Image (cartoon, rainbow, N blue to C red):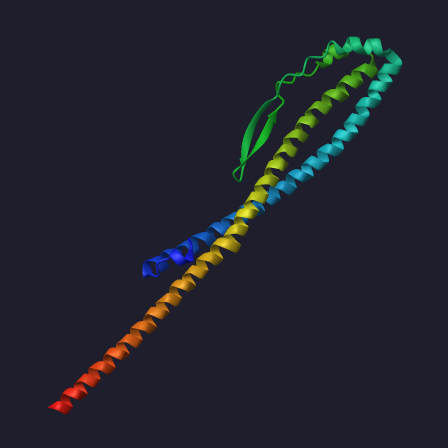
Amino acid sequence: MAQENVRPTRLELLRTRRRIVLARKGLKLLKLKRSALIAEFFSLSKQALALRGDLQKKIARGYASIRMAESMEGATRLENVSMLLPAVKPVVISSKNVMGVKTPTVDAGRFQPVPEVSLLDQPTPIYESVREFQAIYRVVLDIAEKETALRRLLYEIEKTKRRASAIENVLIPRLQQTVRMIKFRFDELERDAFSMLKTVKRKMEAEQEAALANA
């Protein structure tokens, strides 16, 4: 709303003041949303960090078990056992709403680990290797879920921050300036009206004095 195009009327003044009230309410809501998103972001960050630490430990144990199995049973035996493992099926991804942000939820329910019974007849090193790497699968999915959610939350936090800044530093000051401009024009009109009334009054008094002098 360009100030030079604003009509200095009472109605326009009321409308502009209402817009300021609405803008302040919107700003408050955006700040509350941003605070909630930041809290969720830090909560997920802690979870993702813990999962990454857990993943590193699991990977270290997994490769140690593979090296042990290979040294004891040989690479050919490991390849044969690997043929028994089921193929990893596509995961199902749904979404949940966090303060208007859609974050992914990964469902790993379609993953079918090798049944314990099928592994009992395998040598202990191979049995341990399979168990270790199957445990890694779930952690990897959890990390992917959390880190994707973190990226989306960070994007929404920045977008909310920009919108709040635009309202607080651009829109509200501009509307307040419009209010001041309208009130200034009101004051000008009142001064002009007062000056005109004084001029009319002086003319009327002069005409009355002239009429009395001529009577």
